[in-house]
Amino acid sequence: VTKTAPPEEPLAPIVLDKDVYEEVRCSISHDAVRVTWRVPRDNGNVIDAFAVRFAEACAGAWQVATQVEFSEAGEPDYHSCRVGGLRPGCAYKFAVRAHNAVGWGPFSSPSA
Image (tube, rainbow, N blue to C red):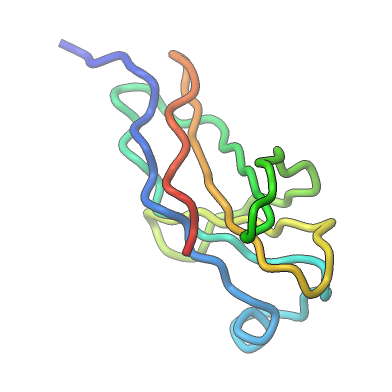
């Protein structure tokens, strides 16, 4: 019996700041961060998309990230994206969710 349900909730994403990201791969602008997460269980249907949302850490409302470049994170069970269009000097929190043929799974807990 094939289980058909939306993907499970991913673990909270990890946010790499500019300094860490530059050491690992390439430069990144002052208004963007790299967000990495473990791909959740797909529940029998291939995951075909991810959505990322963000909010200012102090009390901002959640917004859908639209300036996003998705990529595999270099490790088999991880994906990442570069989220741009952020205000320099602000602290942010991020959450991610996955989609399959059945629909969207729940958002992860926010990044720390």
